[in-house]
Image (cartoon, rainbow, N blue to C red):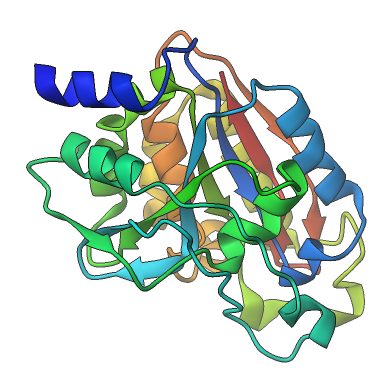
Length: 275
């Protein structure tokens, strides 16, 4: 980052103490319109941190070739799901975007080429959780996509380039689920808090211990950590947002867990705060 980039960022947002960072287990899209302990956890997390100048969200639901950032001034609310009640499709989250922040994020990530996107918007991985945290929709939100062709270590390293944003009041959120196997959902217990298959219980214990011990090597190398992780992360889309948040952690920062529950046998709502 050169002096001109630093000046541009300073002009855009005021200096702040380093913002915390969050990984949010977003679970079912219905969490957007339901009242439960998890959405209460999202609200509580927002109350415990300074109000951000803007939000950068890495969502499990925007997978691309290469990396993109939303750069429109008013992102649309994307209803990227099917089979849910109409009330969910009626939700709008009219937060403004920030073309300036998108441009600065792209600058920070150089020499990686980042495309400024004007067609995506806010998918439910972003708005279904942010709407509980900031219901007035008065904070600019941009999304950064996940380059699905890259391995976990790439995403961990890429995230580190964004750390400067935290000193400008930018809240960086990863939105996904650590354990996310929809093919093995126990639909009878889809709303039963604490319901988990044996392998999900084992994977939750392993990943929680690694997170709290700072053993990010095993988190990154999850594919070689046994059958419970293979069942828990059959595809990396919902897992990779966690990798971004861990990549932003500095050595002196504390890490804590909240919403740390299994539901539906094969889904965890475990969320992470750093800083």
